[in-house]
Image 1 (cartoon, one colour):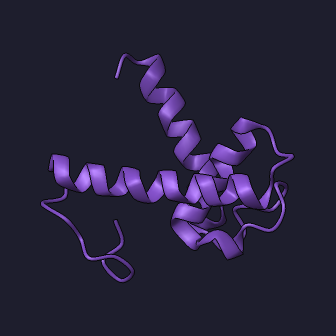
Image 2: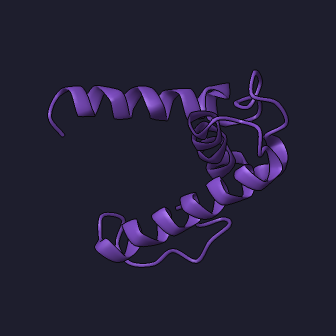
Image 3: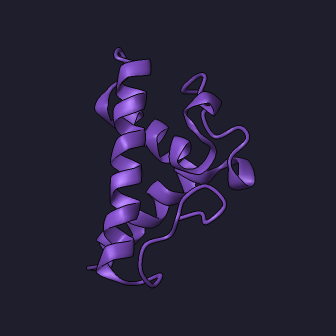
Amino acid sequence: VDKRYHKVAGAWDSEEHISQATQILTGMIKEIEKKFPNWSKEQQLKGGISAYNAGTGNVQTYANMDGGTTGNDYANDVVARAQYLKKHGY
């Protein structure tokens, strides 16, 4: 949770903090679902992840959704990390 934009709840690894981050992410996914109703659920998820990092206004197209995010690759990086962790039993 970025303290520049949100009042951080709990310690970085606390249940309270993780719950806060989850609420922010699910809110972003819902906004992307409204903004891009014709995108697949996977595309909307990636759009929500990108919006979590850079805001919903930054997500304009699926092809360039990560433009302006951290490293210009935020959603792709998060998805790749999640796939790696799942593959390795986490």
